[in-house]
Image (cartoon, rainbow, N blue to C red; front, side, top):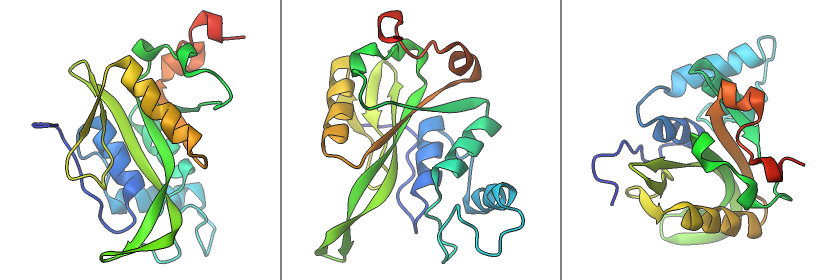
Length: 182
């Protein structure tokens, strides 16, 4: 599955960079560009609050939002109390989720989790999970399977969902069906 798709694999703590690139289906960002964004967000900070102290990634949502804006997209926080049925999927470019991810040391899985950024996008009429921890993109299917996947992530708790849309869609709130706009 996912043959011919652009798919970056997990390296260091660069899941935010991988999620953006996988969503865009090209290498748009690298660690040094993400670091530039961090410096721009907090130019006078000795310790930058938008990334790991170790300088190996772990970028926050502000870096993702700024990076998307640089390529004419916007990120809209999804209110998880709303029904996913109110999403106007045809107006949404893709999704970036922040999900709990187990920590492992080699083959040993630890009983703690960290947050991990993943991308989900429709390509050639099929939705794919483009998680950088996967060996290749995972086919989800059509709109129903996408909503089931998103609902499953939300139901497990500690998950945030960003809708990635064009700036025009963000400004006019076209990402939500009229009946769901109340």
